[in-house]
Length: 121
Image 1 (tube, one colour):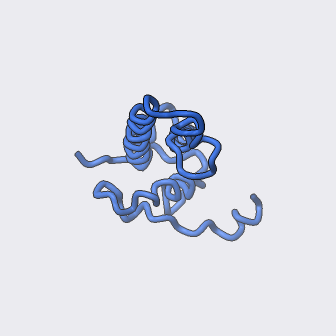
Image 2: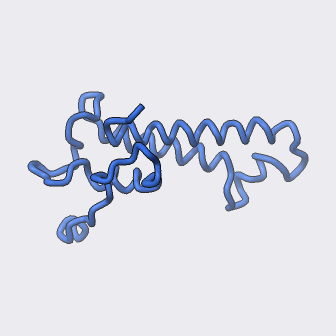
């Protein structure tokens, strides 16, 4: 099934990441000893399923904050009126991580933020 909106695309990828991170936690929890397993990973600074799950939450919040009236079929509220490049740069940047996914659309490629917008930030 082909995903239609960038928000739905991102949320589908996030759900996949969260599922895999949850599996990792479940598989490793029974085997952990002192200083091992998911609890130790969280503070190690390296990859950990907890960090992946936290990133999934952050990505979901980004997508939700860009929805209008509970739907992401309308333009993002941070896109300027009459923008030639909807959706906004934020969602494009988030989706770029999955540019090799078959449901990723080439028109979602991140465009550089206009210089005046970058200066005002």
